Amino acid sequence: MAFVRHSGVTVLDRETAYPSYILFTGADGITRLIDLDGDVVRQWEYAGVPPRLIDPALNGGRLGDVGVQLSDSGDPRGGIYANGTVGQVDWAGEPVWEWGREAPGGAARQNHDWELLPNGNRLLLVTVPRVVADLGDATVGDQGLYEVAPDGRIVWQWLAGDHLDELGFSEEGWRALRRTAERDPGDPWGYLEMNSAKSLGPNRWHDHEPDGVFHPDNILVGFRKANIVALIDKRSGGVVWRLGPYFDEDDGAQHQRINVHKVPRPLDQISGQHNPHMIPVGLPGAGDILLFDNQGGAGYPPAALGIYAGSRVLEIDPSSREIVWQYTAEDSGLPPWTFFSSFVSNAQRLPNGNTLITEGMQGRLFQVTPDGDVVWEYHSPYLGYGVAGEPEVRETRVPGVDRLTRTALVYRAQAVPFEWVPVEAPDPQGSCDQQHGGPGIPRGARPIPARVTRGVAQGTGDDRRAVRGTGMDTRRHRRGGRRLVAAGRVREVPARAVPQCAADPAGGLRSVVRRSPGRRHRGEPASRVRRLRSRRRGGARRGADHREHTAGKAPAATRSAVAHADPHDRHRPARDPLVRPGGVE
Image 1: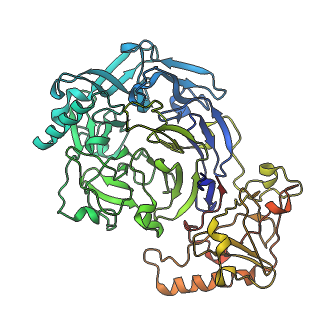
Image 2: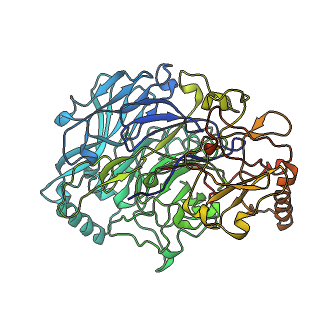
């Protein structure tokens, strides 16, 4: 049985996307650093949960060091029990620090998150198997935090089981929590599924109120199964600020939760959230909390979820507890269910105001503008197997329930500044010659991947219309595929076609930018949209002097024509998620 899925880079607008490398661990357990063309710059034969390329300012100036998991514990449950040792490797992949064998129980059991602190210590999110009195007599996977010094000493610790009464559970919530722990004390993801831990760092709230709760050393954590985001006071260990677990919401409102787009507005029910963190100083939105609200099943008792399954990224003002920015698929002009990951995932604010999003369940990484335009998109081609599609659980545990399935899951991704690694930053205009080894292709040409779908071959009528003359243009297929039209003829887009480059009539070559069909931006008058549409319709006539380039010795069957972007429409970010060219798996 064959399934078709996107693979590699499918959208790239170089004028609007923020340039960086991207680090992630694929479902095959290998950590890779890629550029925005999807090319692998470096890889390490270790998984990270998450992997993180370390800021040289925290690492003695060393470039290219990566935090990963170095060995397994051997615990067949996997998940939060799987890790044996965690550490740091250099650019060449050689370990420079490792910890875990000296941990209580002989294994680090690091999971979900970690951080290198300014003092040189590491904050590790860990699992401690133990009896939690509030949950009964069985041994459960209690999660918490260790601060570990470079010499391996644990200098501070915090365990969730000691603070359950600070998390705001109702009586019904307590009953549901206890029943869950009693039903499956060996759950490989724990009874709370603590999935994030990040110190606040310098922030404007502390600047304005030094004695307030937002001290830079305090740690923001998330509990996925409980729908809770909590702030831990580093000095006392107490929970001093919290979102969740419950929110005021009228019956039935859950069905519109994913559709509401007015901001600012009070925060409503989060469910199964991941990666809450305070946006650092120097980035747009600094001091707000950014999180990936999965809207997946979670809660004690379970939170009501709506008809339209979809995830959202929320930016929250921690003082007013209001949503001040959000992203859902509808911000890209698509139905809410086209952006959905019920578990894993994260979001990261970028210096130009864009946001890097990991739709982890799908293995999809993408970058959006503040208006929701998708300006870069990548689908991980790296597959692995895991129970319920979770690569960290590789052995079945519950008969009649657990099965291994193939997955492209990506837990988290990180945008990495070029200056953090010991290689020359890529040319922002790129090189087809460098990319594909094709002779005679000028530097500055950019690859445009191609895509094929079954629906393309079935187009009729306007879908088969060719543009007259010598210009090139594209037409979306009514079934969601894409045809390339050039010089009065229709050309099919072959699977795994060698990417081509678009000629710039002013000389040299430039990247192709796809435009959304007349989507109206906030505050943009309808007359302007009509003018833009008119310009697009005239694009093929203005492109008479475009040139088609091919890559070296690539066979003719793998060549494709490409479209030149409308030069009058550069101010609008490229976004056409209905047209996703790329390799097909």
